[in-house]
Length: 152
Image (cartoon, rainbow, N blue to C red; front, side, top):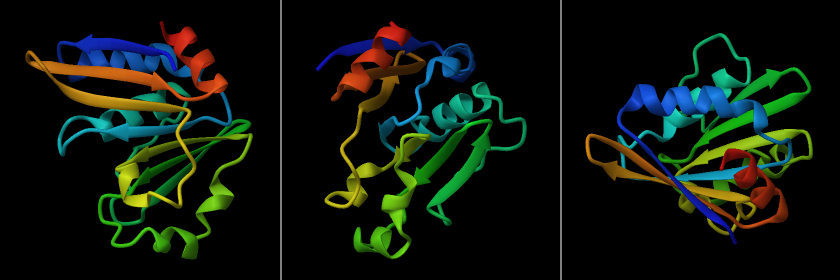
C-alpha cells in the first residue's frame, strides 16, 4: 500500500492538476472517492473526465447513479451513490458489467455500495485544507501503485 498527498489552494488548482494528470490514467482502474458533501468529489471526477478528452458537460450522476463516457478506447463510468438506498440496487442495474479491463470507474460514496462493489485500486480522500483541499491517495493493488507512481 502506497500513499501520496496533494494540497490545492482552490478548485482551479485542483482542476489544473486533474487536467495535467488525467492522461496517465490506466484502463481497468477502480477509484473510490471519499469526502463530505461539497468537498469536491464531482469536481475531481469532472476534471479527470475532461482531462481525458471529454468536451461536453460532466454532470453529477446523483439521480441516475452512473454516467458513461466513451473516450476513444477507454470507457469511463462516473458513479454517484449518494442516493442509493440499498446496495442490492446495484445488482439490479448490472453493476458488475461496468468493471472491465477497458474501463475506468470513478465512484463517489462507495461505502453505499459495500459488499457489491469491487475493491478500489485507489482510494482518494478529499478534506479541507486551509482555503482549499487536501487529497490523500492510497493504492490497494499493483495497478493502483503504478498509478500513484505516475502521479507522484
